[in-house]
Amino acid sequence: MTDGEPLVTEQDFAATYDGGAYSDAYEAVKQYRRATSYAFRNDVKSGATASALDLPRGRLRTWIDDGGSPDVVRGLETAREYGWLEVTYDESEFTGLNTLVANVFSGGSIADQHYQPAFALNHLGEESHVIDALEVAGVDYEIVDERDGRGDEVRPTTDGSVLGRVLAVLGAPVGPKVDQRLELPTYLENAPADTRETFVYSYLENRAVERDGKATLTIREDRNRSYLEELTDLIESVADAPVRLGDRDIVISAEASRNLGTVR
Image 1 (cartoon, rainbow, N blue to C red):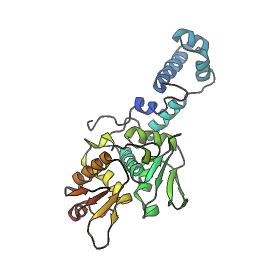
Image 2 (image 1 turned 60 degrees about the horizontal axis):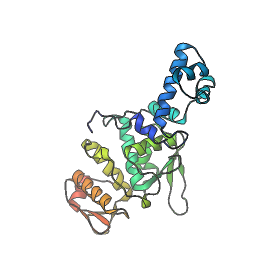
Image 3 (image 1 turned 180 degrees about the vertical axis):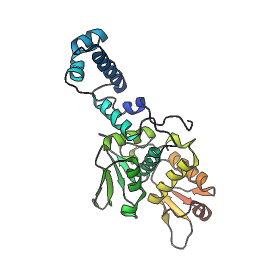
């Protein structure tokens, strides 16, 4: 993946709708565009369009005669308006998205139905970087007070499902993380240094724990071993100093902690 290569394509975004109203949602997008374009150019209704394009008239009647559109088309339009489609590493929109992906891994979730995301507020509360990331992404949000002892969280109040789908395309896990074999997003592999740093800093702000009398930081995660190894390597590459993986803990050495700077 190169710097100029799009990180969220139409096809990948549309695939998050597969299995709902359409088994292949991107095919529905292409049919919608063909049908509405034909009807407009030829000033005809659904019947003539269906005959000309050999498509079901019932589907076209909704699109052409009634002015409706598939959910996936509306989702694509919304994602494009936010600047998330075809986003690249060097765009400000991606900075916010990258931070939110890190927060899904380290203290958030995306519901496996409807893709609604939620992000835990860490010890910084409303000063948390996740608030800044949502504002950079241009999404309205609300803070939900502590629930069942799990702490406060922040949730989008507008277009949350579209945001969740974009984060999923970027590699954020959907559904309960404890039930999954996690992998870090592939876009991190060849990402610019500032992208990798932002991801690590966001992760550590949520998960790193200081121990009394020690200059090290510790992350404890009940996740699959391969994911912990990936995360350890990523932190070490950003810190440019030793980071060690134990049985469950990732121990960030004093030197690495100093190199990373103040993350808490």
